[in-house]
Length: 224
Image (tube, rainbow, N blue to C red; front, top):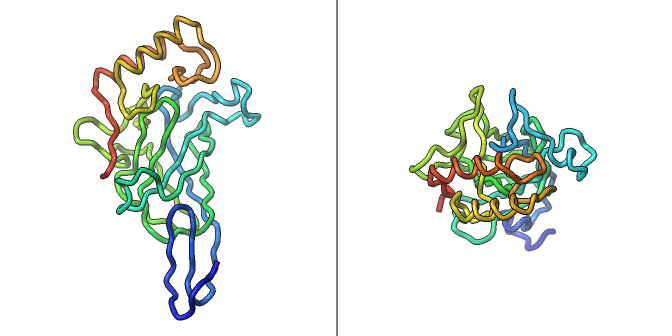
């Protein structure tokens, strides 16, 4: 929308763009994101197509859903992101994020998954009509808490988000293991948070991921 007349600056935030004064064009934009999930990773830069394998998506490349959030540097201590959207992460690590307008500013990128540790870009990313960001190529692409390497170093020099945050509290610890143990005892199968490796079943393979990462005392790295 357009308000005012001699003011011409634009105000953006909370997924909205207000232009003041002279009419300005508002166009859509795209973020091409690349990321891997440690538990879902198989070999050669691919992950399990969990959504497809469990019958939740007809696309044979559909691995899982993720939430991608954008935060202005001055807003990282806020309880809500400036913009968030859920998208499909495909088995080669690619996700296309459609934005409602050209942002024209720099934002941190944060990625949430149902059982992997929330991970942020190391620095604010300058957005254009088409923006690309690849977490998989180096540890330096993810924000570090100074205590741990920010991502898991996978075979072949790829980097992936840590598995095991089953309850999404920003930690991988015994609380996550307790949830997983209960689900494994119930022989839980399907789309569940305790299925950390994306094979549809909660069991020993998932427990190994959580146990190994809990020993690293992993916790969310976020710029406040």
